[in-house]
View 1 (cartoon, rainbow, N blue to C red):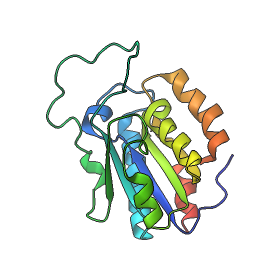
View 2: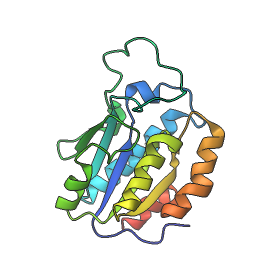
View 3: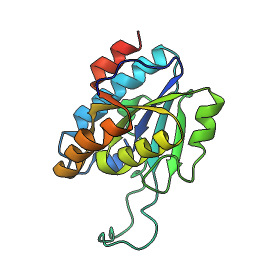
Length: 183
């Protein structure tokens, strides 16, 4: 569904735009995704709306069949990319799982600010972004995904999330359309 409106207290939540994730091979060039995310962040900051920068420092808990990632990641693996132009007013959330709500204080921070809607962007579409979108919807937030500001390492997983999952959780639109809705 095309984005129709943004609540007066909408937050931008950028998922896993950190050096170790942005460096992975993705369906759409990560540099383009980061560029659009930076545009969104600048627009939200200009309208004095919350910007949340999420990074992951852990892995999926429990047993799974995914091959273990060998070795110790580089020291800067979880560093947010500089293109986001992190500001002191930004909320930084460090997560250990796929979604940004589980095991973090994200919900509490958003509620304290009166946030009723979240706009999501980031990498990976079908992992961190989708998990966060599902949880946001379950927490009662209106959800909008900037579909040209998300990408994944798997093309089919990306398409499934964008075409089938996100429209069931909320609204979807382009970065440009979301920025226009800010007024």
